[in-house]
Image (cartoon, rainbow, N blue to C red; front, side, top):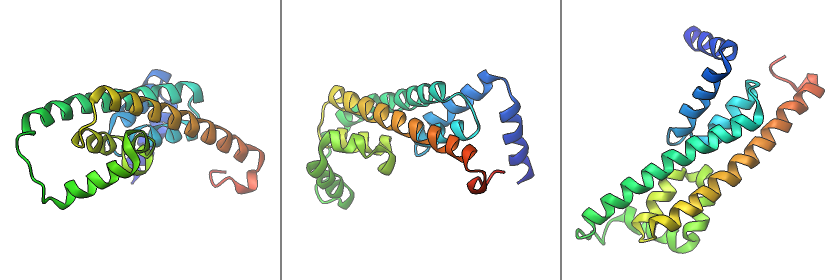
Length: 165
């Protein structure tokens, strides 16, 4: 645990480019993505606007690469039909219920990569999925950035509620 505390201290004291790189690297990791990277950056006191932009771009890039890879794989295995798969049936039901747009906005709940995979596997075009994923990532990144920016600043004015003081 001490090594982790030292890592965090070094990150806070590091050059701004190292801090930005750390936010970018966190944002490209599936299941962390921008919705983990942005709050971490803002809580550590990194500049909010830059953190939101870097987190959103890193998340967007990793999802776009994932969409292109999944789309290519789908074309190669489209001849193999497994209609009795529980997982496939569940994914199809989710897709039918929410569509590409709904899945794209569910990114922080499910994971953007999983949402993109469900959409592509259900037959949506990669360009359509890419557009909606970009919109979902952008909207959620800005929303989280604003919420955490003002939430963290609120703690400065209410010192009794600040667990870090």
